[in-house]
Image (tube, rainbow over all chains, first blue to last red; front, side, top):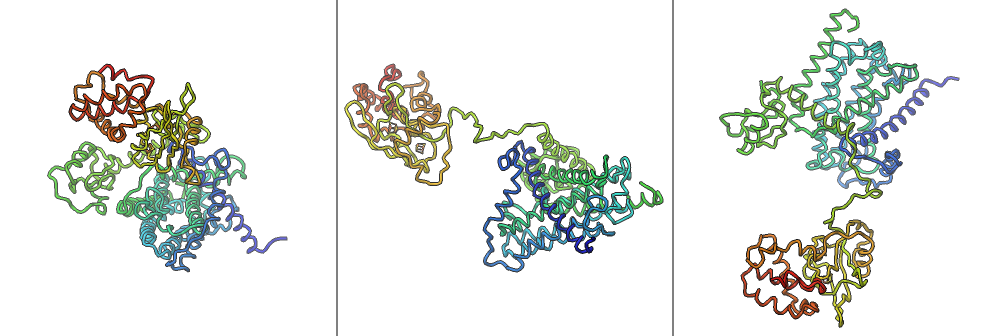
Length: 332
Length: 306
Ligand code: SF4
Ligand code: SF4
């Protein structure tokens, strides 16, 4: 008996969604442990002794039990919808990611386009949150975020297009299969263009996710907790979940575009594990940056985007195109 | 080209300086002198802000866009190197607190407690109320119980929730009755639990390790070297200390004199000559007047030497 395609997709979506939520929970633990070691601390330890294996669960429970406070002057509809509007695009990006050949919700032929378009939608929820809270800090923070995400989505997209040009396809599984062979991953290919593109991709993702050192939308001294300052309880948890899901999603995309996705030594069933390890590697790179730097000023953030990263990514894209054209469609 | 990246980050123009300088050394000099010139606004705006406040990332010789980009890359590498070294090469310094405890320093200022005499097992406190007088937030209340041999504290309460842990009460206590403990665990769900009475304070003293400081030790430590005494020149810190003690002693001369026990005969003699002397030594004299009851047994050798 075969299920109708819609039911199949629903089941796949259910599995992926829960896997993503679980992964997000444990990725936060990973980040906390990692950050702690960078600061010569230990990090979560006692909840789920040793090394705090149950900490994410405890955190989730705590957030669920917390009182949900809605500011009296909030725009209730916008305020209540914002966490959902924020979370949905962040989780939706996982829909196109193939975790192994044929293992994914939908392997669209314009997968990367879908990914880039949907991940940029996050900003709508974010601004709704900032606006609906009716709080000046939240609003200023949301405006800063819009400002910054608009600036960094361009270099993000341009760098993500470098592998597309090299692979000659927008389908994510095709991009992976173009990276087979020893040193076939796009980081190693195209005479160093790949490494540069990966670095630019990392910087652009960090900025597009508003992470340190580009985290101007959350500033304890001036904006308190930024656009989520008025959220508590489960709504706060949803926003947090969305944020980490987005980071994880871009880590997966980075692993897929530059590090050869599920390709790796060993039998085929090891593929998803390789993919996961690579994604975690990218995530840890982002975390490493986060815990190494202090934040930079708003104007510096914009200057870096428009004056350095954007030209660099355009040049990289053009160079990749030239390389492909020069070799007449052969591997570069 | 040097402000290729700095267009947006360039601050409003401060008064122009004639010679721009870059680099760590140049920067500190500039910072001291005042706002920096517009020439020194580096490309990325990395680490430079108006009026200094800079992170010393760029070195001498970082010229132009590429020079600055190179410097920036190097700085990024160095920063991430530090965190990487922490990650892989350094052990966490965390002490797993409730399970493992640090060795607290000897001068630790923690919870207060009352002590018993080691030999006789009697309470040390004689209810002299010096600690009550000295306490800045006035959290100690003592009531004296007069007796033949010696006096006792009838009631002794300490509102630990308002204590500022200044150790002054320890310092003035003539019988080393009040001490500080090497513990700071005060967390409680009821504020009233921190209103300590005499029994509780004695119990605490038996329960925890005492800090080094006692009244006698503190006063010995802060007394001037013998050669300097009587000549009237003392360093500021000691003078201030004596002045602090003075009002307490002056406020209750009768009490201290009465408590002095064996020393009471000399007691009346000692303050008299000192009262004629100038300021600092007056304070000194008052202080020593307060001191004798400290240990009725060991009559002040210092004083008799004088
Ligand atoms: S330590 Fe200071 S504040 Fe606390 S009881 Fe003693 S004199 Fe008062
Ligand atoms: S100063 Fe010492 S002896 Fe006097 S009342 Fe206070 S604790 Fe008791």
